[in-house]
Figure 1: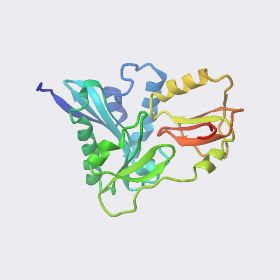
Figure 2 (figure 1 turned 135 degrees about the vertical axis):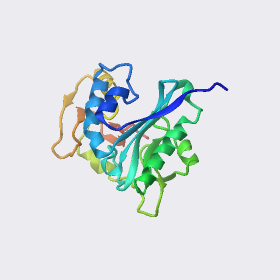
Figure 3 (figure 1 turned 90 degrees about the horizontal axis):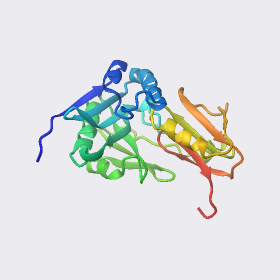
Length: 247
């Protein structure tokens, strides 16, 4: 088997982010998504956020991003835990154990910090990592959110387990009818995804409902005059879409 020079770089300050990037969109440093994420990280590092990047022969091939549960940009309750926002290994670097090494580094950090454990969201299909890797490393499925999101955790002690809210219908009602996307600069791909969604819609208005508390640097786009809708969380986004009869 070929031998590779493998190292793991820790990015936990704005200076390191400028030097090493944050893995995603590194080839597009002038894009809105890259700039938005870089600015967003400047505030997040003070909260304890870390990014670990695996480099193979000097090339970034995977990363994990996590933060104390109190500062998770997900609809979760996980105080005293580390919360994983993203784990990704790309291309030919897959199936080499890099995902496991990144996850183990996060668990080691949680143990060294005296945390209760590590929590994260998985999803069947889509862009989030599925359950298999985490089950392999001793994570347990604890809670579920529609349509197919699972809250999982690796417990280091007997503290209260992380949990999800279950008032999804009440949360959706705050926005009324229509399509509403609430997103943050945590994911640099959000800007392009929302732009494409806007282009595919004929009528859009921008609004910040006074009844909804949204974290700083979050954004809301609404499309009115659609059918009654259901609410889902997509990790870094909230998505509400029209109900289809029989669904």
